[in-house]
Length: 188
Image 1 (cartoon, rainbow, N blue to C red):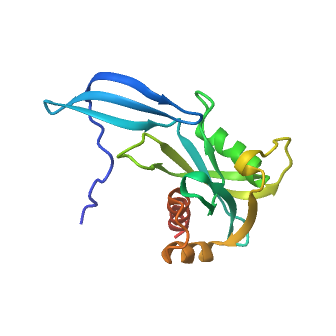
Image 2 (image 1 turned 120 degrees about the horizontal axis):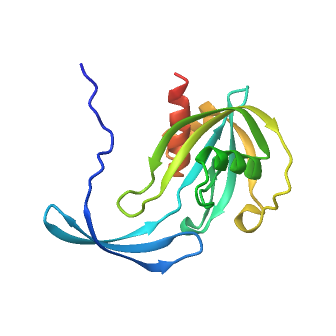
């Protein structure tokens, strides 16, 4: 049996108009009018710089998890180290290395790009690169955590426990769920 091609198929649409209708601290909202199969459509979407996330896996088959307040969901959730691609032109791997250091105080000897994820394609152009980091080393830095990162917790969680939490519907951070399952599948 031949595997079905499930890759995204990009379409060239004729863009008629594009405007920023909101400029935010982290992301903007754009409104675009475009021609789609002869029909003029208008869509608003979150215009996002992109992001990275890191499954940091140690020699004991544990992953680094951080607990951080996320105002949009009014909750402190468990997630993996992640951050914005907010430096124009920055390579996602360089960003991932920086985020792992700043959020988890870790560096890694081996890096593997697992996948790329469009987080909410119906309403945002955010694309997140997911990496697996191994050969972990504790490291120091001069980055000062502020805001929601100031009281961030970090802990090692057995990979099996994280997967159980995902399957039980307890861990709901979509990027972390996808990344952890991708890391697990890549090792099978």
